[in-house]
Length: 270
Image: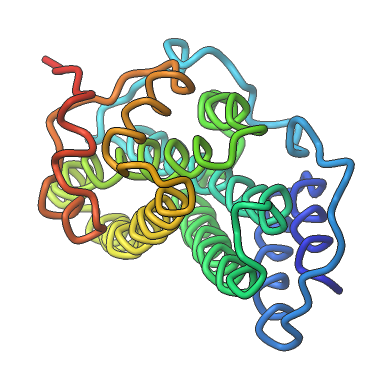
């Protein structure tokens, strides 16, 4: 089946583990057949979701101390929810933008290869975290979550460059800033297995941000734009949240994001 159709199928799959399996299937099919397919006219505004978790405003998602199994479960649940959204973001990137006029015909296969790899990674991350929740006697859906990640993506559904700027270079890059602290906190309470899983995710997310940076620079060249200043303009126009410091400058630099991208947008946090 063509990659664009498989990406749409991911978006229409509600069950989390089935969604992850569909993402892994898309990657395998793409590597076996390299078939792009025809444009998709009826992409969903909101990806299919299970009945649980309950989606609430971000401030209503409870925070728990990591000293208890429930607290560690809440943290892992929050990260699993991010990874589930990331599956949909990568699938939507392919289904919505792989045939965009800003990509030269000879580069479309590279675009799908990059984002199907990201989608496959996010699916593997979700499965790891869902399995870890099972080991703790919990399940994905046991805690409330918010829809902020997808809502942030919605403002860019008609703007390819803004989607690349915001999804990987703002939202995923934020994960590079906060994940090392999560890992240290888990180790401090003796949960080395959960810390190990987050370390895997962190290491691979550097590559995902790098994929976004590479394609953003590609689009900047196509539009004869200065990458950093164009990034500032797009984020200010399309992102309702804040680009928060402190930043993990080492990881961001490894991913191809110099301080010139994000420092001018920074909102300090206490």
